[in-house]
Image (cartoon, rainbow, N blue to C red; front, side):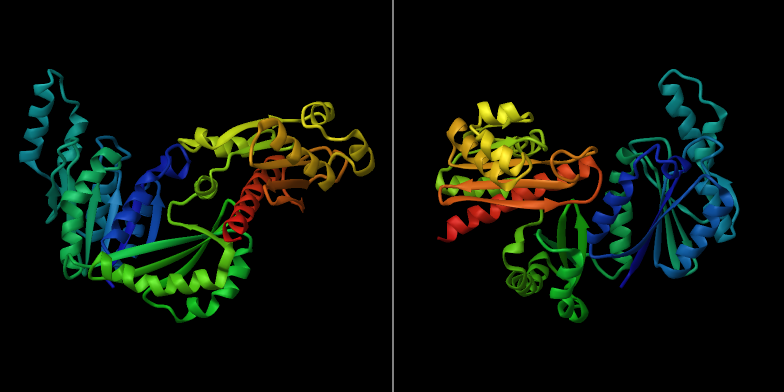
Length: 416
């Protein structure tokens, strides 16, 4: 497979002063084109380190894209590094130097002489037009590899990549008809290791499509990627593998690609014409916030009661003081009475409640003890979690778990 590497240039990226959004965009664009993309590197504004990075990338890849370092200041070293790596001189394009002067004159301003640095280029390189800025891109053949330099400013990088770099890469790769398609299967309820075990033989045997696992925000995502001549052909290759993944993981799968748990819940609620609300103590409205972040939710979501203190649980939600005295406020008994109270007070068909000890100080139960209940017209169930981590992690994971158990309860209703 034709291999491409990406090098982002700039100390500001290493220091975290600027988020490297170019890397994700370039990676996505290369994947869409069916090009192999195996490494990304960030290098600071240091000539020796940048030359070494170019050498290493060019030795193992067919093409190397460098972004950034094409400006007019002394720390813009990409042109110089490309010349040094290729063993050629850095020469000045007098025609472009004149164009720079005219550009500044047309704006009624005097051009700093340092701007002429943008007219320098490695001998033998080919300039790439930049209608959005003053720094042209560059193409330089270096042995068996081809180097591309593009600006680091996204508004300049994106059109240069689309109009000049991508067509060249696709031609060098042997055509413009290869595409890569990915399908993301979203799951919840098992660890990454367990999902990996369930799908291990698929991972080992699959080459096209490939199978990969991604863990984030309590979800485990299974990514299926196929390369083919057309999007339709790639999708057809993915379909049987996706069907097998879904069959093995069952109810753990809640969506695909850009689906969110909130959108899945609303689809299930709307299918039955049901409304929803929450009663939250330890999560302080986090579940309600996630549900109300979905546009158009007002046709289904009715409201939330943030019942942080015991008297609010008793006076508004109707929790029996005797239940608190016997079981403690952090208990499944209290969560069940809270969820029934929410259904009554908010006049909803479906409700979720949470009570718990999120920390940093224990409340009634050890820190990390979190209890939620889900109520549908069929009845209510409660579950106790014991979660590690700091206060915000405990609260976030509890909200996520409550939403997924709500989804499971709604799916059981749908199947009944």
